[in-house]
Image (cartoon, rainbow, N blue to C red; front, side):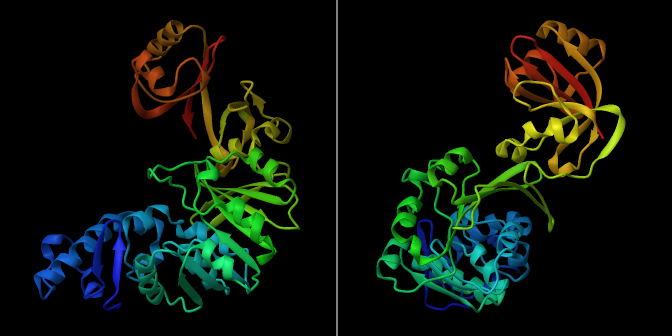
Length: 394
């Protein structure tokens, strides 16, 4: 328990007093009866409110932190790494002294420490750092030293060297809007690397999933390797490794309940050959890496549009590469002709995906008067030659 330490979480202050007794026993603000004074209760309730708001999501995002009865605050929780992705990242490094320039909630710091690394961590918010110290004690993380300072201030006075520098920059602008423009990140990672790259032989950067990976390679020439880190069907982040050993490679990574699957776009992957036609939609991370163009040769799948976002073939691919469907029917022609055929098939409800089509998925559903959901999946493509593929999931 942290006493007499003020913690600024968003726009309020409160003391870490009697929290440990209350946060995991009480189910609602109405149940708060432990505060011995009105003043203390006023300080207690805002933190309790934010923690209660975060906790349902934290059960999935940070399960160990919930198990160890950590306390959460809204903004640092929203911006922190999911625990299983932090664990994957940390598994690549052991017995390092790591300089973490953007400590924040501390999920990556704790994961690095648990994998046998020593961490020097920075964050300019003294109150957030107090929250981190409270949680670190709960998690038994004893080899992390957190300093209240900015990355720029620390590096300007730093004389030490490290095995790795880790940065998870704030992607929100002054207007509090998330951005994928690296120039708007805080701190400015390009300036820091340009000025202080000799501080460590490896710089590890966590970037927005919206970042253009070709642009990144152009910025750093051949000194960077990229991993597009995903959970099933969602790109979570781009992890960029700057080092002399980097070879300019891209890797697609899926982390799913502790299981890690990887593909570099070229290597062979085991798959099942079937006699029937399979409709295949590559996972978002495959498209992000631009690996979909390798699928025709590696898996003998035929691309169904010029952007290689839909395929057909006799290969039943692993689920972490994308979604496979039984192809029920292919319909070509105008939207009117497509709607007439769907009516003839008595299809009134479907899951819609539209890529390189005249309308987006929402507009297409409205135009065809289809309800959302159900067991049928329809994929639309083509702006001149319109075509749709009616499918059912395996």
